[in-house]
Length: 146
Ligand SMILES: [Zn+2]
Image 1: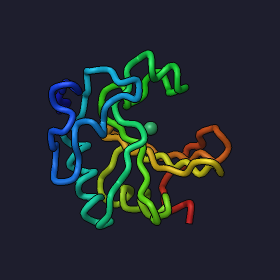
Image 2: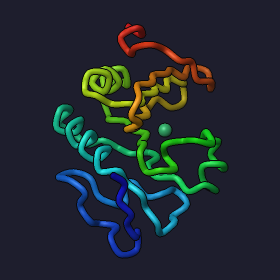
Image 3: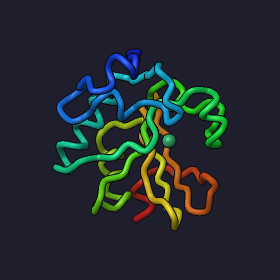
Image 4: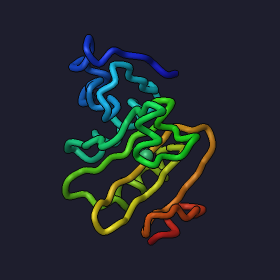
């Protein structure tokens, strides 16, 4: 279920133990913020597993911001169902493997030299991909990367 918040009114509202509304806000500072409750639940479980802060580099995206940053037309970021994340000192593969075995629908691992992060989304089906050179390559299972 997706919930809608106002960034102005609820920026510091806690969605879970460690996540606030503002962390999911669109980078264009739009007031509307969409967040799926299942996504929050999964991220909090990952946060508990890692035992340290997770940085969300992209959560909800408006249509215009999604176009601007080159997101897919049907991106789950548009629905508040996706987050791009990293955790200092934790390799993306560790996060992606956790996601693989904890019922996360969409898992994309981005291993470009300038920026490494993991995309997680709560789509109903299972989809995995790796991005090493700016283009997505579909894979069956994150374990295949080991
Ligand atoms: Zn993403």
